[in-house]
Amino acid sequence: MELSCKNEYALLALIELAAHYTNGDPLQIRQISAIQHIPDRYLEQLLATLRRGGLVRSLRGAKGGYVLAREPWKINLLEVMNCLEGADSQPVDRDVSAKTVESGVICDLWNEAHQAAQSVLQRYTLQDLCEKRNARRQLDIMYYI
Amino acid sequence: MELSCKNEYALLALIELAAHYTNGDPLQIRQISAIQHIPDRYLEQLLATLRRGGLVRSLRGAKGGYVLAREPWKINLLEVMNCLEGADSQPVDRDVSAKTVESGVICDLWNEAHQAAQSVLQRYTLQDLCEKRNARRQLDIMYYI
DNA sequence: GTATACTCCGGTTTACCACTAGGGTTTTGC
DNA sequence: GCAAAACCCTAGTGGTAAACCGGAGTATAC
Ligand code: FES
Ligand code: FES
Image (tube, rainbow over the protein chains, first blue to last red):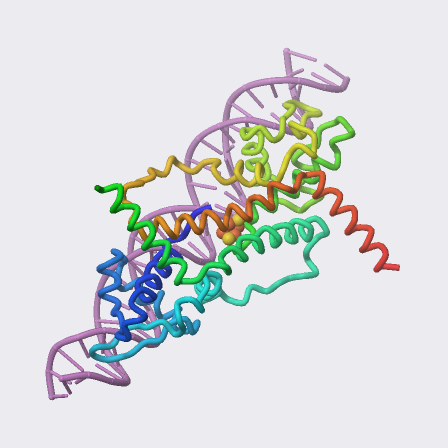
């Protein structure tokens, strides 16, 4: 029941990209990794995956970097997870006939549970994440005083 | 997003135990592993974990085996998952202060999604599993004719 | 044309999963 | 008693993926 580093890193990077979206200029890997303390060479791979998934666009060369492919309120978290999940996993051969009655029942229930989790993720967009972050920052400031 | 073998094996074994619960005699590892095609030495470990979690009771010696610790309708699937999950994981030191605002937000959302999945699992008991199995068996027979 | 920054590909280390192995202990049945 | 049947414990192995690092290549700005 652990949140993997991969997912967390990707979401952190996307939050930064979403926050800088109104400003049109791209964010660079180095900047993101410095802000969020993510290993830069690893973040590079994750952003490449997100690019292949069509969630971000990249600008090469000097003054290059990454921008969101769509507006922050048009990208939900389920898309992000799916993009990272099925990235390089080989087509696992679904041996449908080999499933017994019992494992079929279990699989159905498991899918139902995951459907519930995924519908929650589907409801949140990157903009929601940014807003939650801002709200929490305000809270932290108030506690600090 | 994969259902692990460990969880599936444990649930398969528990289904068998639940089905034989009215009949008072214990089921043995060899029997379960033969019926559900589970590696016996591996199933042994899983049943030991379930025993330590208080979900099954074991009877030692010849004519021994395993029985459910409670009635099948008093064991829900969330209990099973939690029992297997936190079994032998070392106390991972929760470095709470090290979490940034952003990762805090992400963690909250992720927990909310999992809460949704877990509440689904909490609603199903072993008896529900058995009933679903029986229903599906009936279906299979009807298709066969 | 050079500095910048993404892109592609491979290697490495660590950790976990699925499973195996070899002992030990408790109970039954003779 | 005693051996067989069954659970109990601890450790170890092979494969795979996660997390991360490096280097050579390529596109773009100035
Ligand atoms: S285990 Fe996280 S969404 Fe299913
Ligand atoms: S990933 Fe399965 S319940 Fe969260």
